Image (cartoon, rainbow, N blue to C red):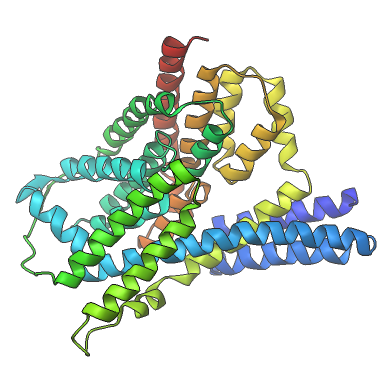
Length: 419
């Protein structure tokens, strides 16, 4: 592949990024932009492949990337169908509201939501934790600015909680499977995670005043509703256990759970006028899935042309503690999965403490920008008024919280596991 072609492909990626950033200015949906440049990039790579053998190699690379994308799509489809049902019925929101005090300050609500998001993301994937927590946020009557602040806090809390267990974040699982850290060592990242969340929450407090009144929702739920709730959380638990003991891909467990949900709807839905369970698939916002598709096509292209290797080279020339911190910042622009994969492939020789710092960095650093993590992308599609620019206004606060959490992670890891 010629240098000129690589430059053109990188320009495509930059144009897509600019299109997302200036979505409000150009009035073109971000999903359309990323999908166009993502698909166009691979089309151009095929057209300028030299010879049939090169085209076969390109086809193999495309199939590999499409397999990863399809896995994510199916996983998101299963997860979002569950969440669409829970949100439509208001089950999670109603249960949490019943446990909340009748009246509390907005600041207290922010803390409750942030800690809930963090704890939930430790036991299930970031996508599910974000969708469920944002559904909870919408259940409270708060002003637009406070809701945006809470959404940014949720994104950071979800990404922070995900670093402490292998079920919470893909990059954490990758580093664990590479043999560089153990599960007990990962659990120590819970402390820097909660420290960062508390710092960000406190930084968000200025301007947040007043109280929120919690109205106890009088609605009641059917046996089918509770059966689906039990199925959802059982699926999350089984996803953890099956992956740990049998290395079952999470998407497979969630598809089984989704099929059980369909059976429950078929056998327990006696009201012919009630929306059938299968139709909740149609309530999924496919705009979010198309955005993921475009972004992953672009990231896969950058990986194939070797652009990500530049980051790996930078990593080997800088002190590990600073390099890990910078990798966290880079994960806000580049998907942390291929970034982590590139770092693992380079096989740097690092002590356990530095591997833990890297785990925290690439897991939480994506919170810096709305497009830096799955949680941020979903938040943009679910929270009215949360655009890339609106999120960017809080990036300095997120950077402070990330830096504080990273310092705690480095100090704790060095204290417990040596330099």
